[in-house]
Image (cartoon, rainbow, N blue to C red; front, side, top):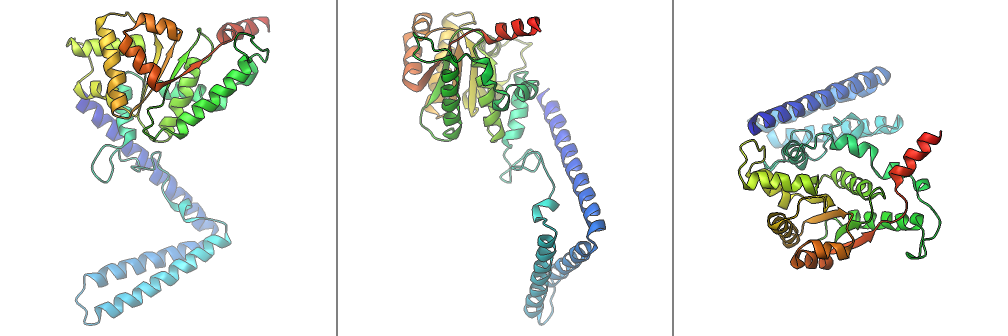
Amino acid sequence: MKDKKIKEILLEYQKKRDIAEERLDYVKQKTYQEIPSLQIIDNKIKEAGLKMAKATISDFPNKNKLIDSLKNEFDDLKKEKEYILKKYNLSEEYFLPRYECKICNDTGYLQSGEKCNCFKQQLINEAYKMSNISRMLEVQNFDTLDYTLFSNKKYDEEGLSPLDNIENIYKDCLKFIEEFQEDNRKNLLFYGNTGLGKTFMCSCIAKQILDKGYTVIYQTAFKLFEIMGEYKFKDYDSHINKEDYENIFECDLLIIDDLGTEYTNNFTNNELFNIINTRLLNGKKTIISTNYTPKQLGEAYAQRIFSRIFDSFKMIKFFGKDLRWENEKDALSR
């Protein structure tokens, strides 16, 4: 099944490259029509390049002298092209294929032969059935963060308003993203009641990290432990293999949403500790969101789990009114 999926993904990469090449050809032809001198110079550069290649593998008596002469000709032509581009306010990049992934140029592989992170992410999405993650992140991202949803009335018990709080949380999220590459054991724990923006902020961070070319696994705690149980107890219907299971520990960012909604037992406690501890040891970042308070987490999970979270996660509290309920009320009142 996985080999079949890999073939499908590679076919999609080929389609992406074909589209990029077709777009480039269209741009070139259109530009050549508007600037004929550019096409002439490009043809001359191509011809000079072929001459240099032939001279390099030839046995001419004055081979080196010929190559130097052709190099000078080639450099002069490049300068002439630069002048034309500058005159029409164009850049060399304008005539390069526009691949979706600039790291692997939509091949799925790096020059070293390793899978590109964009390829790994597609395999992760398939393994964890997150094919809709891109659509979700189009809606839930920093560009769609609406501060007007948050009250500016100060909560006495918190010492600030929900608006002030979400602005502070936004800054914490940006700092986490900026320092993502650093092995600083800084992770995030979002806690608070439902409907306050925890999942939204998880999505915002996920999008930024994905855009930077890192791999992300984003799952609810319930689904994550269900998947791990299927793998550990060898459910024959499970689509998770050893590599997919190891990705939980090795992906660049793991987001566990709604911790506390899963059925808690020795298995989930042991797996949660194993996930957090292994990722900390490997310098991998983790974000957890939960409706539990830190005190409730300490009561619900083993002390060693809470100790790891308390030591290596920044605890960020969300408070205010249920935004989803407020939005529904606003919609009904229109």
